[in-house]
Length: 318
Image 1 (tube, helix red, strand yellow):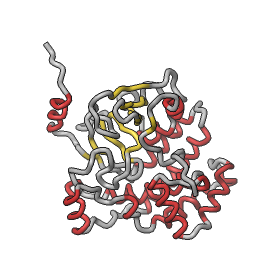
Image 2 (tube, one colour):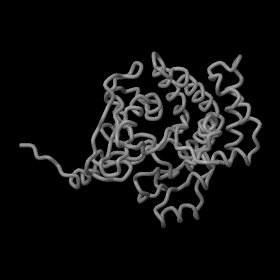
Image 3 (tube, helix red, strand yellow):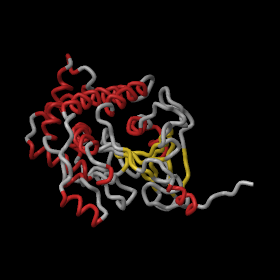
Image 4 (tube, helix red, strand yellow):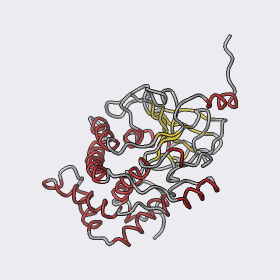
């Protein structure tokens, strides 16, 4: 006879040998994301934006190659502080990657290099020019507002491109970090490397990570394990349920992306299931499942965190 395990017993199984942390691989990260976005764009209601996001990811890949040399390691004081206080190693808002403005300008130049801005929606072209003409101080202020979730209305068009530049730098830094340096007691609801909230969670397949749920950082693309019985926002083990759309968006099964809801904190975050589609990519599939967000907007659950490539966060007064 089989016995149903209780939440505490499930967590005790967490001692088996599988990776607790999956660091990004910038050499392939953005190219794989671009390929997934192009696949998702086929027959999709927001195909134009998904193709633009793929074009942006391709530009990110070229910049990631330029930054192929490992980032500077964390110094001893940073390591000591992170371990002592159980805090992320590189808190995003206080540790912007060096030369990230240079990366941003290179991304903008790349996007503008195609004839007639091919692949860039007409509504965004003026914003690309505005960002290209901004100084480092203005760009830094915009980055801080984007990272802090305090965007102004005039920021919404440019914020995803700024976040794309930051993603390149933070992924490069995360990839160069030694796993033993990452504090083990950072709250599991935020990235242990940069402190950002996860954009989605993913059920991985293949290798030692297969069958395990990981939270995927929307900024540095690191992933960390969290048992499936816990809400990824408040850590409650009660009232966690799954909801999905009845029909697929584009070529992907509606069961590939579900909304994990929590009756304790009344939020939801998407769960991307690679068992349903091995090519699923957390950030791309989250971006392409906006219909699910629209359906969830009619419920009592609020989205727990935003997708960095689509600025739909609450708009603050100037």
